[in-house]
Image (spheres, rainbow, N blue to C red):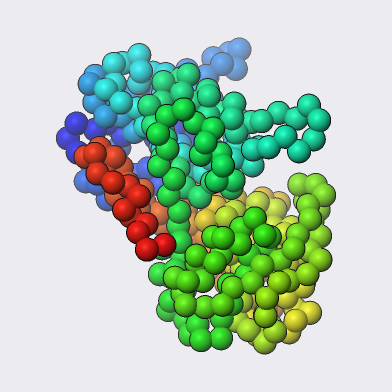
Length: 314
């Protein structure tokens, strides 16, 4: 890894440091300045010439600030004659903006993909896209990881003989089915309709959940409206216990407290693709690290090895 240069934006430097510790390389410094007219400036404080540069920056709140910071870092590396620039985006927030479902609607996922390439990114490494088709928006190679191994490793400590994995909607059912196969459990899915960012309705649950131990699996939890609605339906089926799992724990507007307020919910599990502030943590919240997986993917990208081999059998 001696010919790599790894930098972090300001969104999640703790994760970047953990990744570098896994790789045994230093996290190189970068300086961020804001001018009086509110414009940002980035300076990479280490040599990039002919090096394999990795820039780690999840797109998390404030999303636009961190996204433009990422553009500037990529642009700075390109101007410094980097041999290759990989944008490591553990959480790609604009994956939700993936289709034209209303008149004159913007496609943010496609636009951000184009802008990353325009800034100078030669490759993208990301985790659990909300909409997998966003992968096709990019004109450069994309390595799309998932956190099912990390989540499965955690849940295997429990007795899963009476467990069912439940997807909050049909769009996530394929991932829930893969997770259920890894755990050797049953699978079910909810039929959901979304009316707004925080208003959803679940009409039914497809599958046998009565009297079961439930693991609700979602790709991300923001306000938690879908999970709360699903928990209400699961309680009507007299499930025995509920555990909630996701890759991206964004937890806006008191989501952890609202979900954890249900006595049936024993645990909320997420990964650290997005930073989880100490102020919103609770006894029921468990945060798993994806640093080893991202570090291994970075090592394989640098050495020209297969990244997809990490997920054989899933």
